Amino acid sequence: MPDLRVMTIHEFEDAVYYRAACSCGSHEHEVTIEVEIDKDINMVSINFYKNIAWCSHWGTPNFFQRFWLKMKAVFKIIFTGYIELEEGFLMDSEEQIQDFINALEEGKKHVATKR
Image 1 (cartoon, rainbow, N blue to C red):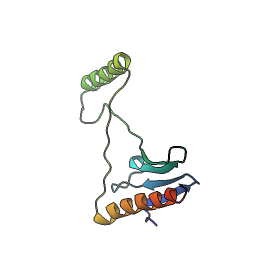
Image 2 (tube, rainbow, N blue to C red):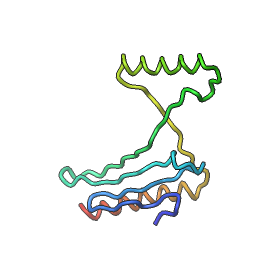
Image 3 (cartoon, rainbow, N blue to C red):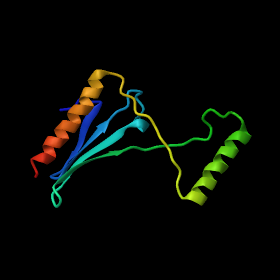
């Protein structure tokens, strides 16, 4: 069973969900991990869900620079239909990494029994 930084949040017949906490302690950086099996095609899959935010104020103290960054983002969405974002997830110890691995292995075993 994973520890508090990687915990089971839901178990269903075909899937199990875990929440992994970021080492920085912020709830905004958590990752939800879904391990599921599709019995129709006999395939196990893993999905990661994470909320991602973008802020024009980060690193730009000038009002005009922030406004320009916002406008560039708006035009990119309007003309291309998407915007690319990325966000980090910090695991600061071997123990937390092992807990993450344990959660994946436990999820794999959980759905493998449903095959």
